[in-house]
Image 1 (cartoon, each protein chain N blue to C red):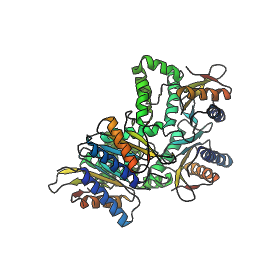
Image 2: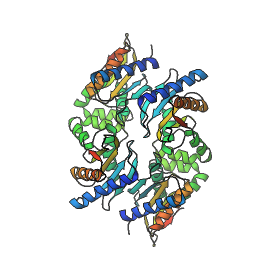
Image 3: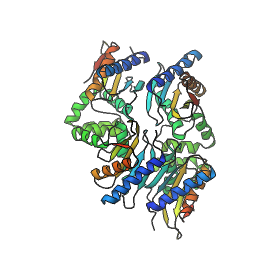
Image 4: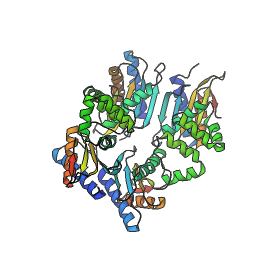
Length: 142
Length: 142
Length: 142
Length: 142
């Protein structure tokens, strides 16, 4: 099973719907394939200039280390220099706060990652999880 | 007038519809705002790994120099070293072949740019133009 | 089907065996997954300092554009500025001469890419093709 | 004496064998020559997307400063800004946690460095040390 564009669009729509329903600030949502390459992205009106880069960095970091960006935040709380170093090692795209979530199928196969940015990190993550579940897939936040 | 997300989605859908109708290879389509920041992007199934970066570079280059990427290609044919230098100057994201098109409203106000990659450069451009026109806006290819 | 490490090792061994049999200069061989990430690499004794980077760039470029590096060379012969620009757009890792080959299974599914460097580009490519075929897979050189 | 490819392969195999025996998560193992250039690398199935870059950064950092990456971690605990600065100075590839180990012969001559990533930093280092010792060489972890 792979994460095709239609599924990625469903995830983006589901994340945005959660944002609207819960009254979040405008979100930017990015879906990456397992190799870290863009499948789909949308930046809502009013979502600031570099939200794409932030959302992308959450998802890219999650794929880089094989854990949700919440787990990377926890590591950064313990060893900030480690996370700073990995950020350099992967080329700069790693944002270690919640909102970057791995996507898996029912068998646990990695299908990609989703990142969001715009509201609090916790809310960004909640939107992503809602989007992944709207597509019938499994979200791994840490 | 600004290019909002719904309009950007209409452009992406219109470009993709042109690709399907004309039998193009799978496309990646990117819409940027006047500051060169992503509004929306979609990579169709089978569109290769870095097509987002190529499509983005066409649109980003068009905004960088204020002309469609077809015009930048013409300049590259005359002065390849100039285009190479500008590519460095803008940070690497400038792809000087057709498929990066400026978007304007009826008054000539710049609203952003659209880039596509996946088929021949001419077909990539035709898809982008179709998408922009589907949104009732004006395409500037050179 | 995915390209696991054991298969990648078979490809590397097969490429190196071709080099020994045909009397090539020492080779460096790299196997990447479909997202452009390393699975395995070996640099033979006497293969010069940056051969890994060259071999990697052949394979990475092939994945970036969805064609063997021989096809990218042909494009570079026609539009050198285009290939130079794409090289920037993908972050620098694109070497447009033969020796970067896509790996597909019997159904045509993309499994990754293999790059080699050390002898002539044609011989590098021949080694890669031999390695891919030694693993029972299909090589796409252009 | 130099670290030839066959010895490097022995080190990688020894590190991986330690991982299997001790039940570590899937590892990525990289062997570099004294100039910091790749000799061999393998990423085990399930080892996440950027583990090569992390393992490489541990080994590259060790060579950069002439000490195991455990010693660099100790320095980072004292002066994080120093390690951050060196990371910039060397171009980004320096990961200051255990798992990057210098390889020396019986006379103390530097032959290269080995890096691993995938499990805890301590276990990554244990795997590397096991690999170096499997090749009859001396490991310097700090």
